[in-house]
Length: 331
Image (cartoon, rainbow, N blue to C red; front, side):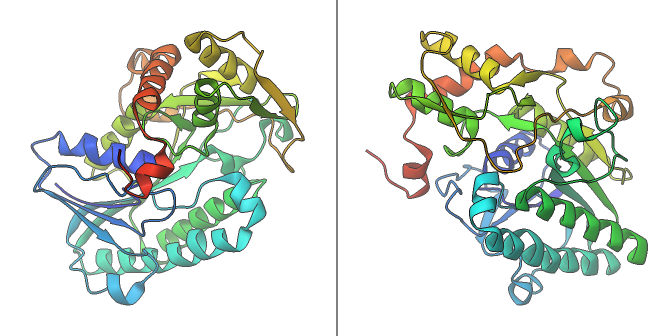
């Protein structure tokens, strides 16, 4: 099995690469990553099957010269921080739409030449918008897309271009909408690393609004195992919602981490002005995926939130801040 992975220096992408390199059937892994501020450039698996190309996936001239002989393409490459998208939406337009479109064209040409296998696109539950704006209690694969931020709008745009390629060219692709991931090596601007960093440095944890926003949380290693199942199913071109059904408010998440660090439940919480357009609830129904991949008891295949948070906390206790790692700084 030959893999082309984009965004593999990022959080989820790097864990996916580690997962597939555990398989003897994996022949080759090419990771294409632009090496943005959130990239972990010290991620270098000691495996001769792995190579990394530091390049923008939107560089059509450079990437069109690659042989593109891969069994599957797994696209993680995206800017993903909502706050950043609100402050600088143009960057998300350029990276998540323009660069993505160029890369999609390259993959489409590879498929038409019978060189490239299917395309797996990693998307997000945020493309659906807020459950509270829906008439349903959860989202499914065919729910309407109603994004609420420049980030989620750019992810929805990516999905629309994939649908267009399917209709026009018979493009073979999966769209996987994941709930919130967490775990070791997550970039420090994300919510759980912010909580942990604040706890370890005895600082206040900034909480938007009333802290009652609800999200599903999945441990990153559980998420990449599910992505790999789809990658290994070469004739499956369907779309899936991949959630954990482990729904927590932001305050409940803080309380869980405070419990692990010996702090009072909410002693270190500092409420701040809510984010503009902040969605209250994300929740997906993952039964379609569970049925397709024979997960009869899906909850047994998930890492318990407390256990996953322990692993994540231990990583941040032992490691340099990710921003230092990203710059290659070591003690």
